[in-house]
Amino acid sequence: MAELFHSSKPIYEQIAEMIKKRIIRGELTAGGKLPSVREMAIEVNVNPNTVQRTYRELETMDIVESKRGQGTFVTEDTEVIASIREEMKKEILMNFTKQMFEMGYTKEEIKQGLTEYLNRKGE
Amino acid sequence: MAELFHSSKPIYEQIAEMIKKRIIRGELTAGGKLPSVREMAIEVNVNPNTVQRTYRELETMDIVESKRGQGTFVTEDTEVIASIREEMKKEILMNFTKQMFEMGYTKEEIKQGLTEYLNRKGE
DNA sequence: ATTAGTGTACTATTTGTATAGTACACTAAT
DNA sequence: ATTAGTGTACTATACAAATAGTACACTAAT
Image (cartoon, each protein chain N blue to C red):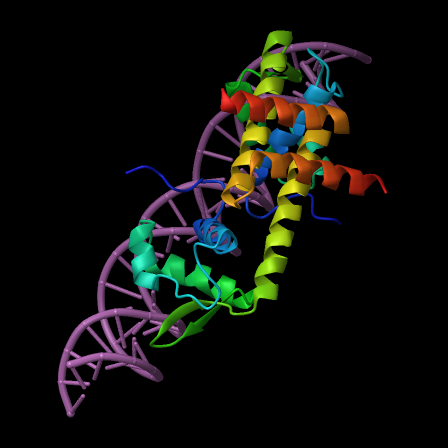
């Protein structure tokens, strides 16, 4: 089977990223139920303990709430979700621009590079 | 001292990234000498063995050449350097756009998001 | 020849990640 | 009450990354 994850980052973090993106895209709605620890473990082909760790992390971030015997649910607090979206966007942009600056590109070159890349993708 | 590295990625890879960027920016020139394994270890506050592993990786990629008793030198092949630059740029752009798409943004929203972010940085 | 500064190799130990297996606690449905 | 499906906890094991320490091989300068 195809490898879902990169080796350079802990799998439990990568699963957390994946779930956050699903929430942000609306695939998982506020108050909605996540796959159970065991289901998710099968879905992403990983040990249940690893998924549990992911859920624990997400719970610490107030993104999900785990209810013993019932399941794990996306927070109903839409403001939390909105702020997660902004945080992720900012984080991704910051990381991207930082790396491009470190390569020596200027602001304009970065913008141009992105535009070229996106146009090329559409061909 | 400030932590130079992220915990989520092997340090030896992060050092390799750092060095590649120095080469690309021209801080380390073709044929130039890198800091010795021991010097670099002190510079980045890490064990010499970790730096050695970085140098070994870079040598495998034909980016540097290690000479016993003399030191480790940037390749003199400027084409290799040029291609590393393009690879890194593409890699960074690909990673960035992939993540933004996964968050649900469109091409135009990505461009706009970048422009806004860069403008905001200048304030 | 000696010395200092290189890269290189090796063993041992620690830490974090991930897996494997088992067991328990709670909830909802029957 | 029983059962199935939840989250949770625990021990044991394996592996990679990183550290620590030591030693060796080679080069250039003295």
